[in-house]
Amino acid sequence: MPKDYIYRGKTLDELKALSLEEFAALLPSRERRSLKRGMSDAQKTLLKDIRANAFVKTHVRDMLILPEMVGKKVAVYNGKEFVTYEIIPQMVGLRLGDFSISVKEVKHSSPGMGATRSSKYVPLK
Image 1 (cartoon, rainbow, N blue to C red):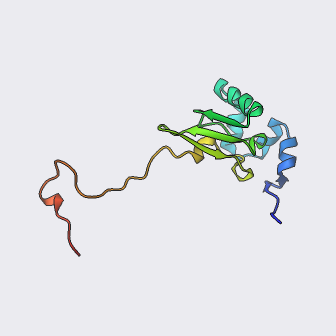
Image 2 (tube, rainbow, N blue to C red; image 1 turned 45 degrees about the vertical axis):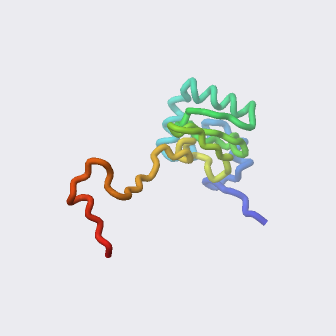
Image 3 (cartoon, rainbow, N blue to C red; image 1 turned 90 degrees about the vertical axis):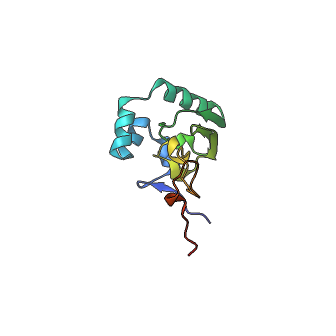
């Protein structure tokens, strides 16, 4: 039997029952301050769309994941494509952009065009 998810001593059902101000009191300082200052128009629109639909595509990477979003599917733009994932309880309190990596890992191979003779040297062990 899977263990129930607990965030700062509260189960997911208890978190969903909290108001936005009560939930903000449980968050770390940066997230608490961003909720205290109020959501942007884009964040408010996204929250309204998430409440209405099971699947949403968005560019709003700085939106905090709230308990009411758990179970919804979100496609977040990473600068090149939309990365789709389902919001699970462990994501509560983080931001949407945290799961849609925008920078690809750089993998260098052989020297490219314009490389000097000395930099083209590759030892054979």
